[in-house]
Amino acid sequence: MGKDFHSMEMRFVYGETLNELIEQNPNVMCLEADLSKASGTNPTVSSRHPANFLNIGVAEANMIGIGAGLASEGKVPFCASFTCFATRRVYDQVTISVAYANMNVKIVGTAPGITAGPNGGTHMCFQDLAIMRAMPNMHVYSPCDALELRSVMRHMAASRQPTYMQLIRSKVPKVFDAEYAFNPETAVVLREGRNVTLVSTGYMTQFAVAVVDELARAGVSVELLHYPSVKPFDAATLVTSAQKTRGVVTVENQNIIGGLGGAVCEVLSEQCPTRVIRLGVPNQFGEVASEQYLFDKHGFGPKQIADACRRIAAERKTK
Image (cartoon, rainbow, N blue to C red; front, top):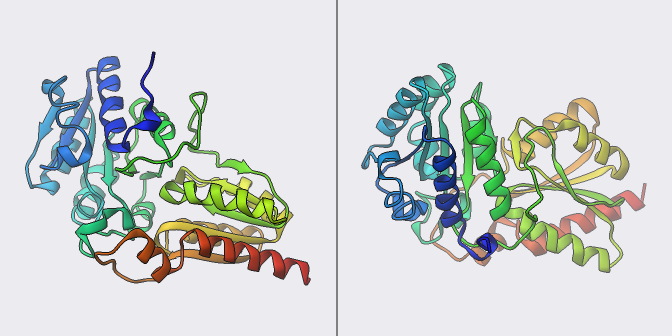
């Protein structure tokens, strides 16, 4: 009997999947910057594959440089750290050593957005999707559940390109089944609808699914598009849905500037001008607080998602 990955914390799914990838390809490497327990790779990977595990210490920029060097020799390094350290702290090293050089380095940002929890404002990175998406050659992924994480990681290990992936550390409800196959070129239509389009990624998709099902019972038909890949971005699926519903809501565990909401607005402004409400963090820093408090303060929890969808649907009826 195989493992029930949906019953596991996502960080442990990450570690178990890395082990499988190493066993399939000994060139896959696990690099950590003294946060391997937080990433779920110690002892999961370190004990089973010590030759493929490197703890660089509290030196994230050095980890990126070592990862680029390993990639130049044919290795496939997965370099993980807290999201703030994996993106903001090492942005120049990633830009030059990985993206500019077009090296096959996989960068993993753990505990994205409000999931950083008690670490507070310094560790709540709300701009990683935006800044990594703006980097040439970089692919940007945000899986929403355990099985999608596994499929994304298999794609990352098999492809040769600079990649950034958000990694939720906690347990997440099931969205996909074992037959799911990640395709970075295609969004996933999780629910079909006609009154409004809801676009989500990563951590927020679990909440979006529940909201859409609740609204359906109340007579509001919402089309739900999940984007595991923010770059490349599937414009065609979005435009097709927007042409049908004529109203869009986006939700992300990020600042509303430049990430998923930014990508949606860029596409629609050029190809299908459409009313859009962006939900997320409104250009502010984080703080030590509960998830519910942050959802309510910044206005992007389940209640606010439902309210925005109702508002768009009501606007469409009056026109």
